[in-house]
Each structure stands twice: as C-alpha cells, then as structure tokens.
Image (cartoon, rainbow, N blue to C red):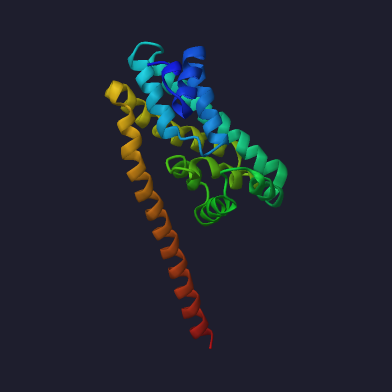
Length: 212
C-alpha cells in the first residue's frame, strides 16, 4: 500500500508518512486538530499499520502523533486566548465544514465541567479539537492545559495506533467501528447535558417556591 494506490485523506496521510516517516504522522495529527473534519480515527490506525510494516517504530508513531496532538491543541488554545470569544466565533463562521454550533457546545461543556473537559474532551470526536478554544478564551493555566491535553491525547492515540498495529492490513475496520462508537458517545454527551440542564431548572424552580 502506498499513496499512489489511494486517494482522499488516506492517500494524503500515507504520502506524509512515506515522505517524512513518524514526523509525517505527527504533522497529519496536528493538522487534524486544526481542521476537525480530518478524522484522527483514520490517521492514527494508519500510523499503527505503517509501524507494523516496519516503516517506522511503534514508539516513534505514538510519540510523534501525541506531539502532533499537543501542538495542534496549543495552536487552538492561543487562537482562543489572543482573539477572544467573539472574534473566534466570527472567524469560525467563515470556515468551511466548521459549525459555530459545535464551538458553542464545546464552550458550554467547558463552562459546566471545567478543566476535566480538556482531558475527557481529547477522547470525544470533534470536541477533541474544539475544546481547546474555550480553554484559551478562559486562559486556563498553561501547565494544567498541557498536562491534561498530553495525558488525554496519549490515551486516545495509543488505543487507535495500537489497533492499526495489531490489525495490520485490516486497519480500516477501526474506522467502521469507531463510527458507531462516535455516535454513541455524542448521544451520551447530549443526554448528559440535557440531564444537567433539567436538574438545574428543577433546582431553580424549587428555590423559587421556597422564596415565596
């Protein structure tokens, strides 16, 4: 398998890995963070598969993809920190395939759950990129942001790189199964947010009755 045999995102990612090795995998993941429609669920297993062929070491694949995740997250953190919420949202509204509603959801989630969203958000499709923006807007301490991003990204990347490494030529199966998992996770997040809002509304109504 090589870049000439494939097209689309897969061919592009293979081209980077063929040209630059493990740093190419890191570059692909950094760009995936900056442009969420690029799927890490394809790039990471592909990096694992490439490692299984001996074109790069498994440790190098894990280290470079995790470094790419951190660099991409840092870039979005500083976008939020330097531009602020209003200008960031205005720019996002002009970008293709990026929905302002998705940024607002990530922002709301960050507002409710604080720092832990940066860790767990690294393991939720789409949120894994966008959660860096509200962290930057709120100027989360850099040490905390880096520690949470690094640990969350390392777990996510290891799962998918190892899947590609172990599956070998069958690595595209990962994309099929993660599509189902992604939908389950998104539904779970929506249910959790709706439940949180319902509980808060009930508490406010109860407080209003007692105030009378």
